[in-house]
Image 1 (cartoon, rainbow, N blue to C red):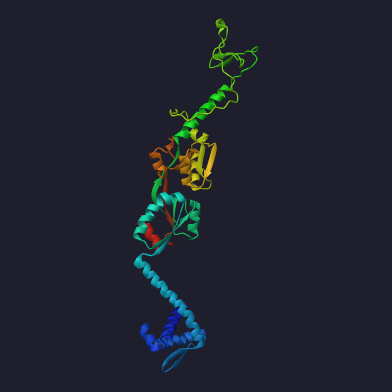
Image 2 (image 1 turned 90 degrees about the vertical axis):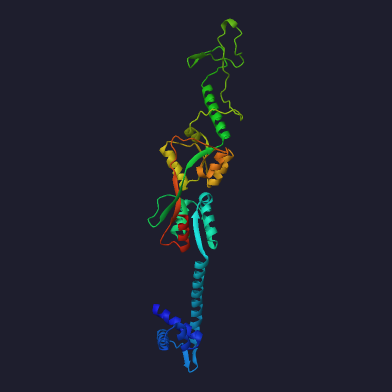
Length: 367
């Protein structure tokens, strides 16, 4: 086939020129060499392709059929060569990138903006998916480059670090204050419920609380005994079994009596959904530090996590760099941790052997 391709090129030029000598000039080869090549092609195809005369050559019916197919093929090759030349001259090309929504917004876009300014004719397509799907797309050859947090990869892929990010827990001051008040009320209610108040004043049995004896009393009995000489029922507590306590927002600061671990465990904790690599990373942190969240709200988007945190829906695990402005302006507060969550590295993943010229140019630009 490789030798036939050369014969096809000669046949194509002769057919266009209608003359062997003119085709020889165009191809910079001798006329006998062209005649020899045509003869070999006719022998290989077992068909006569030209009718020769003193005026030149004309195509046979079989030759016309072959010429139509070759004309389409060689025109396609010529167009491809022109396109490649144009790409080189204008910086044309295509760049397919896979990335999660949050990494695209907060990390990729600044790089893309600068790259497009220098290469305005490059066609860029973005596939926004979780990290594990981005890796799958790269393995399938459907994207050129992925932007992910560092994770174990196949040996065929290269990982180019860009920057580090820090996970953290945030909430609003109002939500935290209400959570603290709720937990304080819960403790007080629990303590009150241990006091057995009987309605029958005939059976008053003293109850010891912190070395202080308090008699059980009737709910209708006054807190101060009418007998001023025997004032033994001072400070009686009412029956509070089943009573709920509600705390109104206050302008006064609430003293934090909870540790961050307790806040995380008792709050409405908002995390990325299961299967997400970031979620797996945080759950590993919980396991290592014996943190057991009670109520978890799963959200599949970091931006939504940030939005829900700022309106006081609970405590959210987010990337500090992505919510920095909200922390600075006081929309949310960052919970202090006894043990910091280890930082993660964000970078580009790609197969160097399969990377397109445009892809290599983009990687080099980002370096």
